[in-house]
Image (cartoon, rainbow, N blue to C red):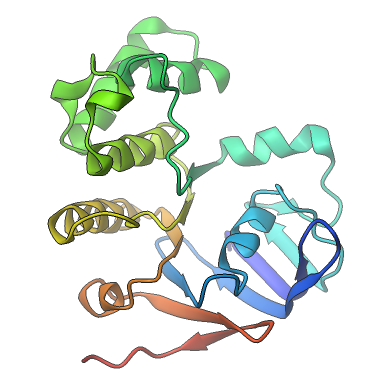
Length: 226
């Protein structure tokens, strides 16, 4: 099991309870949606999974074998290296090319062989259909292309889990479909996807398990087709 939360209380930094008694289990290849209104706790839950926020109380709380209740600050980078994170605002390095953005990540996570680094970057950019954008700067890319580069960065180290915060926000329909098809393709290799979204229509087109954040609770829900 990649994620196992049992009766976890999710709080903001000031200690305010956002979600109580959260139960969430995620296995390899799962495609999980977190839905709910703005401020309902979706992003707060994601931040807890990669330890940007501290989890104070739970019966059990493990992510990729790491115990969130006892994890030390010095152990958090190792946890994050085992997962891919797609931030809502991309967080690409604007002063360097697409290639150098990806090179930076691989070097920072322990890759040393330059030929292996080059091969992996080419492989990932080919997979997302942007091999011809390797030399481009982020500002030279469309919003959809930047989002796909952010996903490429997240899958560089073959993670078992990808956490994505609104990966289709502010994208047109065609680009949204491109991003979703890419994420589905990744999940079919066994990588689990946990993503937040406001776009409920996606759940009909790209089925998965849906959990709604509402009234300080997280509950699995069934989305009825329109």
